[in-house]
Image 1 (cartoon, one colour):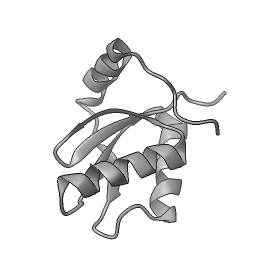
Image 2: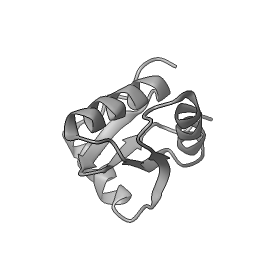
Image 3: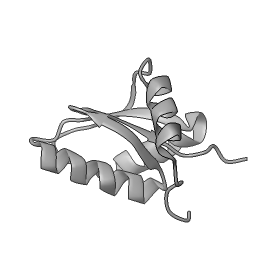
Image 4: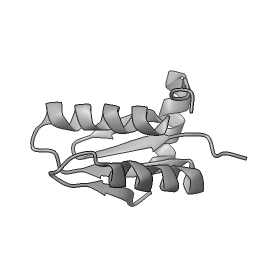
Length: 94
């Protein structure tokens, strides 16, 4: 997988709007981003392309780092992040 998709600010805004009504597809507990979490995220992105992620990190800095690690590991773009919830996008394959 070659990096994350480059999105314009307009594309990120449109995707954030679409993600508002989604329920979290992946939950990341206090243990952080594990190989199991990465694989679950890949599976959800393959199926839906746009997903919401719930991060139970202890602080804002950890949440941001976890989110960046997850996006990098899955080749996804971060569309938005508010509190403990974020949205990721990767074009569906095929």
